[in-house]
Length: 124
Image (cartoon, rainbow, N blue to C red; front, side, top):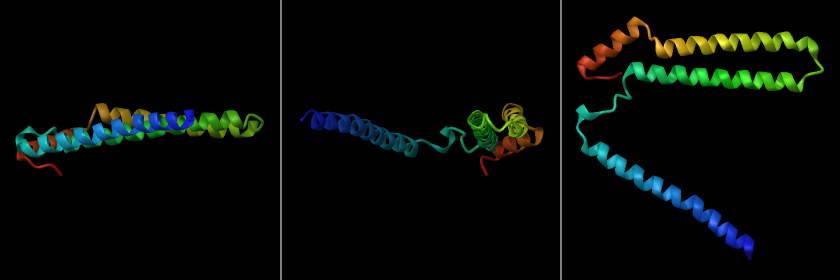
């Protein structure tokens, strides 16, 4: 009986937030539909889209570094593979540094493209 009660409570705890999320999404959709084109968030701006792409690349590279370190720890007996893991981690570190640099310091061409598309009112 206690398992059924716990299952019902657990299901309720899962379903209620999902319903509330769906209701809030519907309200947000109505607000967006009611808003004018000038009140957009700017998420289609090429500069912001590229920034999210670079943050995603950075996050993926950091995850791969952690996986490389985990595999290295699991293969502690194979000492001859340690330089390979070090090289892979170093290369991924360069990927992290480069993607963060491009995310926070975009090139002049990317900024110019973003400002020109904003001036035209169109986003690619």
